[in-house]
Amino acid sequence: MPAPHPHWDRRLQTSRAGHGRCGAGTSRSWAALYLAAVLVCTPACAARLRDPLARPSVIDARERHVRTLQADLAGIFAAPAVEHGLVAVHVASLDRHDVLFRYNADRLVMPASNMKIPTLAAAAERLGWDYTFQTTLAATGPLVDGTLEGDLVVRGSGDPSLNNRQVEPVALLDGWADQLAALGIRRIAGRLVGDDNAFDEQSFGQGWSWEDLHDGYSAPIGALQVYEDAVTLSVAPGPAPGASADVVFATPGSGWAVDNHAVTGEPGSPLTIETRRTPGAFLVHVTGSIPSGSAVVTRALAVDNPTAYFLGLLAAALERRGLTIRGRTADIDDLPSGSIGTTGAPLVDYRSPPLREIAHPLMKASQNLYGETLLRAVGRVDGRAATAADGKAAVLSVLKAWSAPLDGFVMADGSGLSRYNYATADLIAAILRRMYGDPRHRDAWVQALAVGGQAGTLQKRFVGTPGEGRVRAKTGAISNVRALSGYVPAANGEQLLYSIIVNNVKATSDEIYKVVDAAVLRLAAFTR
Image 1 (cartoon, rainbow, N blue to C red):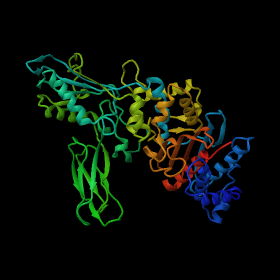
Image 2: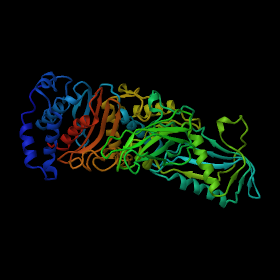
Image 3: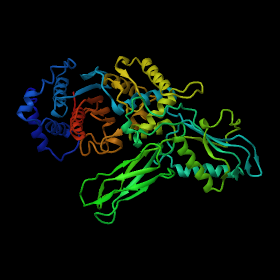
Image 4: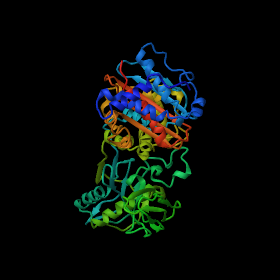
């Protein structure tokens, strides 16, 4: 790698002299500080690094300010933390409609949770921002003297919002029970049946790792979902070092027990809490240590059967309101064909928050279940069971209609958890450009993204920098992959978009984030 850009030392000196000032004038100084941080390298290391502008080529720029930007960005992406990996980058101006920087932008890379970008874009285009998921409760028989003569059937369409992020489940289910009681129902002579046939039975994404299936972030997908199909354990330190940790379920209704071997460590000792549960078992093993005096930590564990979990919580709500169920709870797929009679008009008809609100946990918190649910919902046709394959076809159809570069796209799931996903920075940038440029989509789309230093998965990044409150983006992280794609205003007010996807690196997350964040801060300092 050649010597750093000749102006970098001067910029670093300027940044030190101006440290503590805020505003547009210090944006370049912040960028310089980040540049210095990511380019720390021994002489032997520097000798191994490539000329950052030699291969691959970048945009041939005539403007002096753009050439300087390119040289700075190329230097950032030649940093030691990513030198053995593949960095794919696309930077463009939304105001001037020109591309400022492309670097491996047409190379196939794993996007991690940047895959949620095409998923949500297609859902917004096909379903609309006002789209809601419907859940109904209906009966297969008449009401006679307070007894519902037949089964009570709860039919879902995949609503992912029944969780502590958006709609508190216990309060909602109790409200449903109150509605039934207000109709005069005191007893259900038949069964409580869950109809989850709006989705097919493929509850995991293509290529999901078996090592992940224990954890809440890879919970199975179903048409009846509650608490994101996961049970949360809370682990708190005991009264003194050496004492057992305090382990309790923070969400109800799992029916699981805890085998607690977790202990309280010395103050400041490492947090080493681990959980393990064999699929189908009802016992969670908790081991490791939590430091004395530390805050409570939580661990989300995926349930095995979302429909059974939903029915158990609904049955408990009915019982709390004094409604008795004489039959058992059952998944409709486990009953003999034809054993469920025709249901009448819904006794309860519930609609979820609209897509514009559902998009926030998807993008800000990067919640995988939301992505997989939307993938299936966008592919549902003619009342048939929605499948992931139908959803992928729908996403491809939308992107094709937008003339997006589909030669750089392989979609395995809707969340980005699968390592079978591939995309290009060019494709992600094309979607960002389309969604920002469409007045039907812009506001809801941008509001759904994480915000630097303030909200979502960027809450702890860009704090105290010119990127705080200005960077809006979708993050992405799986093993050896980090991504950040979104928008940032330049120092001159010009609105820029960027897609930065890093693959095949073994550096720590913090080391990679320094590189990526330095690039975004350099964009925030750009002017021409």
